[in-house]
Length: 162
Image (cartoon, rainbow, N blue to C red; front, side):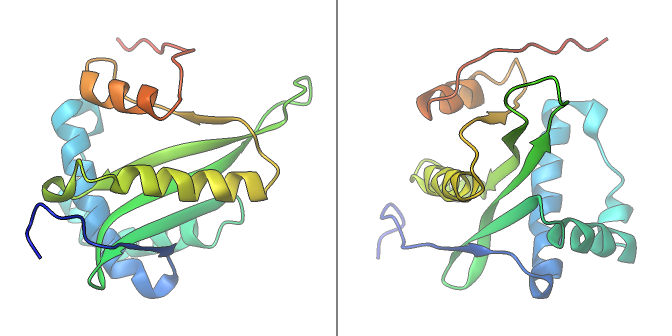
């Protein structure tokens, strides 16, 4: 198979058995985030500690959260981390789905894998009775903003940082 061809992925719910692999791929993701925003630069030592494994396990067992892994040839090459956000009682829409983060290894981007992860997230949100979903990205990241707009998301809130 040529590198330019799309390989068939497997998307599945991450489990505690995946914690080491999740830590490694999440560390890759966070390095990219830190390049965009030094405010989120993290201590690499944390990602190689037992504490980081415990943090990931805590997230994996939460009922209002899901982490789906994208695998190709049995190796994790991406993920989507999603959760249900509860809102105050004054709102008619009390719960919304939120995409915390999504990541595809750089060499596999542009092949439609992110869209597959978003479809999986949407399916899970809808199974929980949710019709409204949010995601955040950095204002200067024009490529990411264009991507989310192509996925049907609309800009509606701007957060300022000083």
